[in-house]
Length: 334
Image (tube, rainbow, N blue to C red):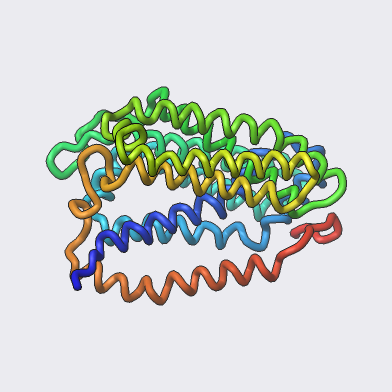
């Protein structure tokens, strides 16, 4: 039996990226929501809700980026020059919010500065990620075995649209996370924020979904051709169901359903992205197999992944289990 190592690794990297988006998405969302929280005590409570898990969430970003470098070196060599400004902005944003997470609790005179740094770092990281996503979806110009586009190809109306959509999506994740993790006035405020954010997220997903098939004929064929369009139609139907779960959860005052429904919306949007991309790793010209390292390298690295990925999943699940339940004002992180 022939084992398709490139396909297996593409799946592993896709899972790592999805895990990062879901897990780091809600704590980036909390940072984005900072200006809309009532006061400093409420902001500290929001930070405390993610304090035990936020740095572990970024493990998945390291795994995805490192895996791309190791197993798809051609893709890494093309994507990085195309997205250098966005990657640098994202890393600076993550660094600032990481430092702010610690310093905001250890100073009084500079506390406002570090709160702004936490908000700004979260917002910049989310915008950079959204624009990078839009750039990949619209396609990267490849010349030979390198990037063949210009310095500003990442700055387009479509990439700006995806950036806004991801910022709103992260904010929705953050608001629904606070609904699940807090009580009283903070919970009520998070629910009030989640309703317009959820509606805006669904509207932006619709806008991105309508614009994407118009970018390239292969996208149009996969979503509206026959018989591929028949299978692809399952995704928007499931997405409608997740949207209904989100709305009814918020309407009925449930605490866990809104967050789980938002996670489902993200997963289904990610599946839709995969439908558009496959079999390309870099649309429109570089496939998974063209970008992959030799099978001997993929096989060697897979041995490590078989050990490492279950370990990451195990300690991630354990940390969330240990710190389950509501966060109270007297349990804030210091």
